Amino acid sequence: MPESAFEGLRGLHLFEAMAEQHFQALMRGAFVQTFPPQIELITEGDPSDFLHVVLSGSVDLFSNWNDRETSMATVRPISTFILAATIRDAPYLMSARTLEKSRIALIPSDEVRVIFGLDDGFARAIVTELAQCYRSVIKAQKDLKLRSSTERLANYLLRSQIRADGEAEFELGFEKRRLASVLGITPEHLSRAFKGLQSHGVVADGTRVRIEDRKKLERFAKPNPLIDDPVK
Amino acid sequence: MPESAFEGLRGLHLFEAMAEQHFQALMRGAFVQTFPPQIELITEGDPSDFLHVVLSGSVDLFSNWNDRETSMATVRPISTFILAATIRDAPYLMSARTLEKSRIALIPSDEVRVIFGLDDGFARAIVTELAQCYRSVIKAQKDLKLRSSTERLANYLLRSQIRADGEAEFELGFEKRRLASVLGITPEHLSRAFKGLQSHGVVADGTRVRIEDRKKLERFAKPNPLIDDPVK
DNA sequence: TCGACGGCTTGATGTTCATCAATCGAGTCC
DNA sequence: GGACTCGATTGATGAACATCAAGCCGTCGA
Image (tube, rainbow over all chains, first blue to last red; front, side, top):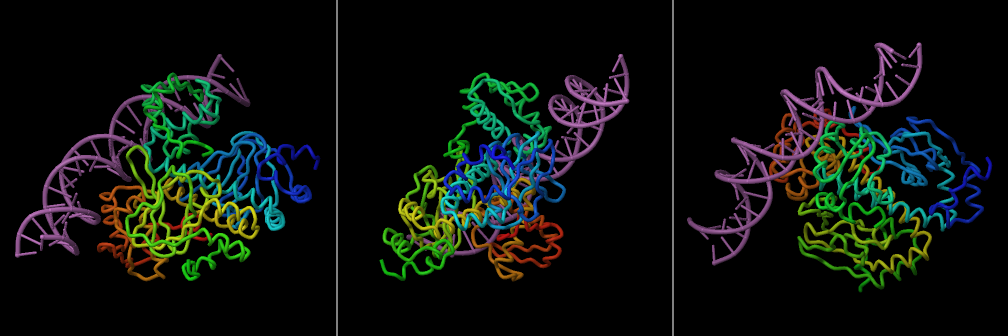
């Protein structure tokens, strides 16, 4: 495995503080693979064999119950997923599939647990990573329980705009049907929610969205750092 | 502060593996206080001053947005809350109030962060604790997004019965209005959801619930370890 | 060029859940 | 005992959201 394959990995907060020899040990069992779109990488309920790191592309985390399915989150480069399952040596709670062509690093879970026991810097980095993940899910849950679907969409668009460096017009990044699932509604209802936001200055054309007047949209969406701020 | 005040704390998984001197250091700044019911212990948005440990009683974690409020979780003895905020030195994402008379241990957050930096066993214990918390919230989110309110209630009751050592009849443990908020519905709707479960063998009388036929209720609720199992 | 297909939209309709108002019933305080 | 409060329930109604069935409109391959 050429050194360059793991480029970017070492710079990740998760791997930054650990001893070089431990990083090397982790990488020895690891490998990088490029997957086409719509490939199911892991299935919920399976034992956690590998810690995954998205190097490029994007991955959808989703879940099933009783013939229903919902999108839980989107993982973008460069970050890991299913760290909690790996650490607890527990089955995956979510399935994952590539949304587009993606490069993924796979690090054997048992190796991660061994190094976790040996390297204190790594253990501490995992703490901050998990604390961050935890807080993200809490925010998602508040979003779900406290807001209507149109309010969730409005705030989602405001967050998207920030990710797009504040550009008035930006790409959603994936299909609307997936956005609907992320927001916890049907595609049909999403279509109507977009219509409902027209009067608040939102123009949607396919996967391109334009926010005519951010202030106006904010008056409706009432974004809150304790729900919408990605870092806080 | 008498030694006995922290009884039980040392036995907590979180504090089990740490060096005695570090535990003592943590306890020096800590104190135990008994609060009456309905006292707001922390408010979302505030900086995290103390790591809280519920020693007896119970605590409701809740959240507000735009004049709405929702219950996020109930904390029972003996466990901590707002660990993630403490570690990240970030504002609380949730508020907390006592549900009944409760004894709470308060450990200064900055002290926790100092010992976290010094004690490797403590750091690793925090990892497993946070991973567990993370997985719990993911399960709650799946519950919310994949199930109807009546299905959520049915599965909640099945889990409650297990907590009550499988007894056919058991106490809810708090008011129905709070249960409604936990399930993400109104009290009125909860009342109707209980009615809807009568035909599946559920009898409710005040805060006492009786499950006539668990198998029957399970056929309706379709419990799933990846949502309902507290440990997995 | 032309179907075929898949995702998005639209309309009609039904279900789920919230809101509002009223009542009931179990404390609790004079 | 009687007035009061507060939570649970019930009924009537409305809003939010899902489902079903077309149609629309790009893309793609024969």
